Image (tube, rainbow, N blue to C red; front, side):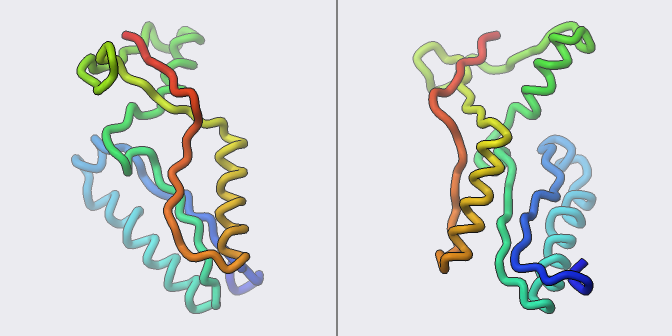
Amino acid sequence: MFENHHIDAVFHFAAYAYVGESVKEPEKYYYNNVANTLNLLKVMRSHGCNKIIFSSTCATYGEPETHIIQLVLDTASGARPDIKVFGTDYDTPDGSCIRDYIHVTDLADAHLLALHHLEKGGSSDFFNLGNAPSFRLLS
């Protein structure tokens, strides 16, 4: 790709994100998430591309409730009999989980804003994306 096109920036979304699986198969996760990212950075550097938007999962910040939207859709369509929400000891008034969801178009817009930030000479930074209000998941 770099040989045939002038690339100014890279959006990096390619990573495995299942926390449980990563504990069972750490080598798989290391090669994909670390080694392959290092390979990408090496190719970028060799072609003079110095801007990367690295998009990480919510798992970076703690225990995920992985792919809740897909679980809800599967339950609504009858592909799953029900959905289980685990935990009643969260730091909330009633102990239930509060989640923050963001629409995919808002997420895409945020990534473009991060690119514009770099293009305007902004320094590398961390941006935690979320929306308000958050939603309570009841079990």
